Image 1 (cartoon, rainbow, N blue to C red):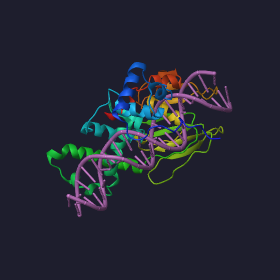
Image 2: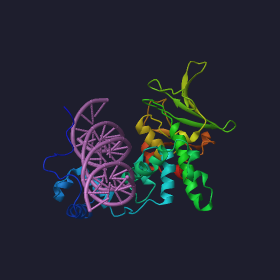
Image 3: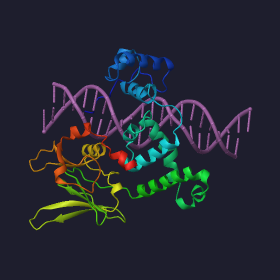
Image 4: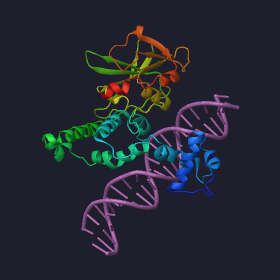
Length: 293
DNA sequence: AAGTTTATCAACCGCCTCCGT
DNA sequence: GACGGAGGCGGTTGATAAACT
């Protein structure tokens, strides 16, 4: 037996919203607040699915939504955030006040994405050849696009069904990042493609072993690392390295080294304990800000 | 001016996670 | 731990506008 639909489809309006429906929804939310989307259409007297109401409110009716074209600065930020986060539109949208994930997604698909896709040889692009001052800001953006294209072509696609500990170290001498993948429940995916990071199993004399993700470009780490989704979102949101305590089998708490993304200096004295929930709450740590600077 | 193609973006769909029980 | 409801998310669709022939 399949899952029941979010609402009965019969007798519901579909397609574009009318001004009257918009007003009904806005008035209802002003009085009763957001939430309880499933009940909302009945209580508000709308012949719409609850999900549809939520989407309409979040993407169009919400007062703080910014209207108008995406600015150059916003586009630049979107490109850089996409490089870091991939198609995680909601995370990207959180960094652009007033912009919705849907709007950013649409903008990407109709503008930036196409420009990246339609660029077989970036250096032959006329805008990149033009070095005049008036085009400098465009060139910078194009450069970012080229960079994005380069990163997209070598996105990490590690496929691990679950990962219980990640420890990020940076070897300052070799400027090389090691990511100890730790205890893998399933065999990790190893991509030995050209120029891609690789998961390496390191065995010690005492018989223990660990998986290491070996690569040269630390900025790729957070892109498309398809591990346990919950864990990944925690890392993305917290912006810190997370080392759950596996010795006592309690995965609900973790040891967090440092409070920012300075991977180069993990001193054990900096260690503090947070639960993933606490980490989420403390999130927004300055990680993305630091990376974007 | 009419027909066709392309671009845009609001809305939908289905899957997923979270959270309460 | 299992289950189910609620909400969130990303991919896709389709209606409409704009550009082009």
